[in-house]
Image: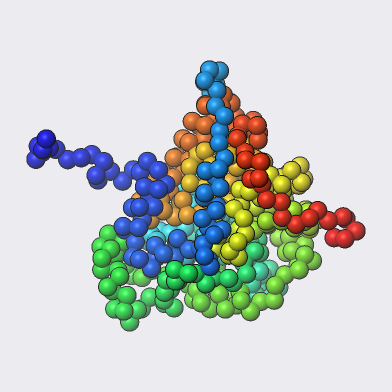
Length: 416
Ligand SMILES: Cc1cc2nc3c(=O)[nH]c(=O)nc-3n(C[C@H](O)[C@H](O)[C@H](O)COP(=O)(O)O)c2cc1C
């Protein structure tokens, strides 16, 4: 039967999406191919990136048929903050996805009552992001000399950051079997003409940035404003990357030093992101961290690292009573959140999920993603007959006997 001419399918133009997969598909259609590909990321053969997501499908849920709870609570506390649901924004750089970038994400985080992780490679300044009112945790790599790191910490604190995330897992292992997208050094006329064929097929993305250009006279910015020296210009993405690559890697004493500096400057929590081994988790506790994120950097780093969710329980069982253990990698639905919390994570951090939402529909798209996740958490709690996320335990799941990966033999205190 043909639909009458006056009828318009309401779903066709509706910017709301029902799953992260639908948001990703919209992002794929909306973004120029190199930008979409930069968000897909992954490294080498993509084993870790893919396992991050597929491992969740190995875990089952064990729901009740009767006895469901009429009231279900998702509030929890992590890193000294009360959050409305155990889902936090993970720091990501490269946000040429939407003109409002991290500011839109921060507004969404504030609107939904959660923590905003802001990358030191972000396209918006920590001042602009904190001004949204979002509870912001600034993320730093180990880059630059000590005075520079202190200056960046002081700036993040002065702007209003309420925690520091140190991401130290990066090993510069970026070769991809499917090839890496070109990231231009800067967006000038020459670059625009060269990249025009890829961008011309994405008129809505172009229109968004065109609007920004008309309003502010600014093109998409590929600089890292949070790494600018006092009174100086922001380095380009590649300038920042070069500084990072040429900084000697940190020791555990350096981690303790960084934590101590942050404690003196701010007194707020210091979180180590990128932990995959139990022995490292123990050392992180010794270094005085307040929390760790079990993570393989979204599979963008050393390929072959197991899915983050496989490493959560061994680490949470070992140090979860001393520090807040969270995880990130592969979260795409509410039931993934529930599985991670049941295995011992206090909360999860999301990366690509909100980037797809941002690309699909700006701030509203990020809120849409957070709502989908909390909606999924609520359904799972209802099915499991629980009234709070804090009641989740491994026995609420079906976990294959060979699921967990315990990396790094426990070390004795003397050997540490
Ligand atoms: C495009 C992209 C950029 C990222 N940039 C950063 C970054 O600047 N700092 C950081 O700590 N992690 C960064 N990450 C890693 C995320 O914080 C997070 O660990 C990862 O995305 C989690 O996996 P998921 O995307 O499957 O949720 C980035 C990830 C992606 C996909």
